[in-house]
Image 1 (cartoon, helix red, strand yellow):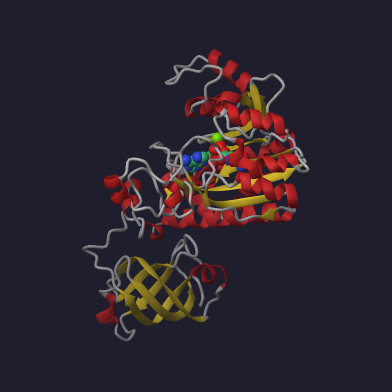
Image 2 (image 1 turned 120 degrees about the vertical axis):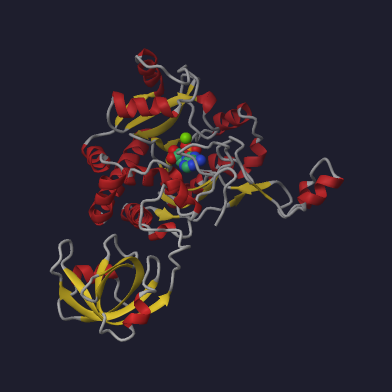
Length: 461
Ligand code: 4AD
Ligand code: MG
């Protein structure tokens, strides 16, 4: 079956074809024919269909051709005399496959707010913006796999159900088959030995720990899967369910990790700019007038690297009224991250050597006893897009760190085994895929960068 993108790109006048799609608009002329703008999601552009009243069944069918209706058209390609399109299709046959009552169809031609569109997430991919986001997400997914595959990384499927908390932030969704309603009545303590896995289990917050297993066996590897965080943050940058890309590289230190992160982001941006031209021009015109400039600027400049300590010094001496005070030892807030990358350096930056007290147990400890070999990549408009580190490969240091973080090394016996048997320096990071989509499209809210967002009190569709 021909898709509209291929027709617009390749079809020549006098070609006969069938085309399927949904009506964006219909306009009737006084001379007894109608123009239909048809879209099938293969590209942003609509195909213009011209249908004459002589076409069999015109009188009965044409009034059903309303915004949102599904059509099958047979016709002939003609050069278009009108502005804005090379060709159009003159219909010889029209079939209305599915009507859409104009009184109740929720997606009218007018511009709707993104908040409203979130309420009709089952229809929003039929809008220009959400069609474009879906295509960019698809292209970025391809670019990610192709970057790693070209560089010899192995894709690993890490588990979605887990019994460890990689980030130690306690933001886990429980997975259980226990009858909670009954338990609430008869028991005050939960006996997890009765649960499906015989112990508490959760949805994963990261595939890193398992990716480390494969990286220390097979070489560079990566995961690209769903991750879940029950953090109750209603922000434009947080989802309860998001996708994360996590490469893990053996025999690599933090410098190697930073270089990989920069090459990786740039390669995905380049691919999307090259393959999604029409959609990217749309974002630049309708969503954020600076998005193309920002992306080209990122491609053309080296990411600036500086330590967390130096960043804190810049922030404390900045002439700014912060909502959250800046103090060494505290996590940076979005306003601080954005100031550094947008205003101070005006390009992506990589912050490294964060205080150990605010970072998870697995990061390699520095000799100063205060910091760990962490790195965050911060980009304009988003702030943190990547978080990663060099991993602690020394068994004694790792076990001490686990205790410091209130973790029992026994619970992570398989993770410490990797340090007992052939331990090596290694590093990796995680990129939040929806934050990358925010960067690529200029969309303000992360909820619009995933087909079906999950956020506090919201899991419809
Ligand atoms: O910085 P984070 O928590 O790092 C990790 O999970 C490491 N285990 C990764 C690794 O080293 N393999 O998360 C990584 C990235 C963040 O930089 C952010 O882009 C994204 O994941 N992220 C979220 N995206 C959307 N919604 C949330 N709630 C997110 N939390 C983190
Ligand atoms: Mg982080």
